[in-house]
Image (cartoon, rainbow, N blue to C red):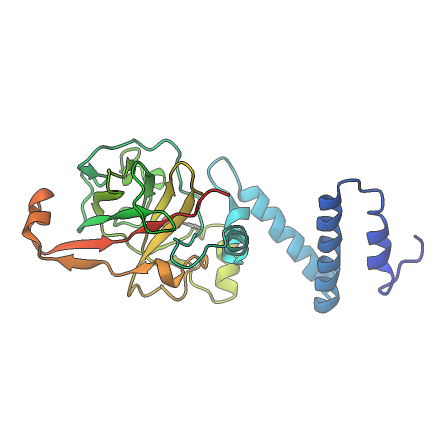
Length: 287
Ligand code: BEZ
Ligand code: FE
């Protein structure tokens, strides 16, 4: 325990874990110490650099409050959130892949009945989103719950924008007897994550932009199936291959096309062509 050196420091700290009763905690702490020491050995920081790192983490913590979570944002931009997500949601081919929840989910959005319109008075290009929720065999799931949310065309969620009513561009809906859903919204846009904190400064320092490609968020759930937190991304978006939080997966990039179908347009009081996107969700059975 005395005379710790560069050579003996890691072993000495690891030995201190001998009394840890919880085996999972012991495994986590062992790995943390090994990797943290490995990082320091690789970087060989000056004392000034180490203090700059401590100051950065302190500022990340100080930026957090009830609505702002700078540590999660840090985890997002370092790819840790999507790594944890991928490890915890390994899905088989054909089932819907997951993506990051993000900080703007609000529990308790209104449960809407058809015709479901989450856009209200929001100005923007009308968009009809439709599809089915299916089980792993492709059979439709009736009564599945979709919880959806997105930004307005100004790139802001209702909770960031006092000009939007509460729960604007949010809603929950259930699938019909054929597992189908359909709702009206507006075309989503790409938008920047919050850059007015230490994470924004870090992105700038390493020459990264803060944008997320245009997307609509979903949490899809049904009794007996594992809920899926995911997003649908607009094919062709300029940021599709450089999402600031690494949330894009090929299977979630979909064409937001146009339909000339007069029945669809009439159903929604629109004039063709109408912007549309179709996507079928595939849910995994609950383990
Ligand atoms: C979002 O898509 O809402 C989001 C995700 C991660 C960080 C910031 C925003
Ligand atoms: Fe988002």
